[in-house]
View 1 (cartoon, rainbow, N blue to C red):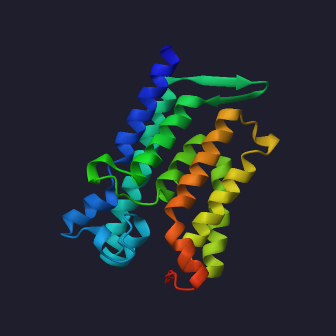
View 2: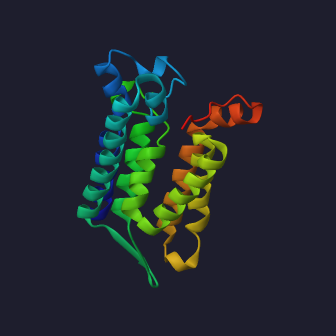
Length: 207
C-alpha cells in the first residue's frame, strides 16, 4: 500500500512539474501564444522558429530541468522492482512518464502542450544514460541527413523502444511498459508531422 501511494505521488509530482510548459511561459513573456504561430506546437523547435534563439535557450533549459527534477523526486521515493539480475526504480519511471504526460497535456494551459520530445530525452538520461546517448546519436544522424527534426525524433523514439528489450541492458517488465508508453506518446503527438512528412510538406531545419 505504501509503495502504491509513493507511485501515485511520483506520477502526480511528475505531471504537475511537466505541466509547467516552458514554451508557453516564455511565449507569454514575449507577448505571444506559441500555439497560434508557426507549427502551433508549444515546444522547442517552434519556439526557435517563431521567437528566436534566446527564447529557445530558455525553453531548452526549462524542458530539461523539469524532467530531471521529476525523475530525481521519483528516485528519492525509492520504489524498486527486481526480476532476476534486472532491477528498476519504478517510482523514477512513473515520475518521468508523468512529466512527459504533463508536458503534452498541461493542466495549467487547458491540456494543450508540446510534443514531449525534449522532456522525454531528459527523462531518458535520468533513467539510462547509455541508452539515451545511443538514441541521441541516432537522432543527430537522422536530422543531419534529412534536416527533419520530427523524423529524427520519431526514429530515435522507435529505437529507444526497440533497444529497451535488448537483454544486455537488464531491464524489467516495468521498463518495457515505460519504454512503449513513451514511444506511443511521442509518436502520437507527432501524427501531424508524420502526415506532412508523407506529403513532403514538413518544415526542414535550417542550420
